[in-house]
Length: 175
Length: 175
Image (cartoon, rainbow over all chains, first blue to last red; front, side, top):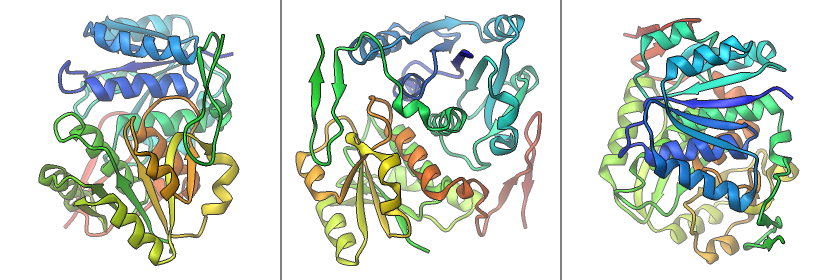
């Protein structure tokens, strides 16, 4: 199975905490193997995502405070592709075939990304060319990449599982 | 064309401002007609989404501070369906056929939704049964609903348009 890891850029500790947490949770829920938060060590983010993984299962890793250039360099040195999701890029739907069955580092950021990143990425891909949300772009990308199979993924070592229900909330405790 | 409107619940003015803005931008970018923020009047949210619509085109409406029960009641009175996106619901992929070609009010919320909402919705639908993000759930829902056509949508009365590019940022000014 190819590895898929999300690299989150541009996190400002106070302002972006919830959006970065959403990115981590989306990465996990929609089939990625882990998230790396670039440049800024943030134990709060690490803990909140680990807590979800402990309850709802894994495997899923989260690391923070790693310099983005090193993360990209290392990823490429093992033969992986670097995909930057940006509204300025080429249409996702035209280039998805290029990224299937490859190890992918998916870079998502805030409004202002360093120009170097556009050069450093193997592909700059757009989930639409309108301003919206890095959380949404990541979600649509992963859903297209995995073709919907990610929504059926079975997580391991979980303590909780949802029983799908037409009304209300049904949660099963495991073990 | 059926109407698609997003109803955002559970917004706490300070904490959720950015996530609510993301929801509004995703609604616009991925083909919905407008967003209503339930219960809380928030002019900051209204303005930031209107500014995007003025620059990048519309039509797209945003309203805030309307009581959620009234919004739902009114929607249903005109024959529209009310869809609540929740990890506890039935799998989206099994029920998408039921919602096509209908006017849809898509309700998205935070972690704790009132139990009444599960009853008030025509369908409680899950974009996966894992905790992740209302922004992501909305994005995947809209992408599946519109089958990708939403990423090609032409907006009207725009001042800016992106020229898709393999590297860097190309923006065209219009008019």
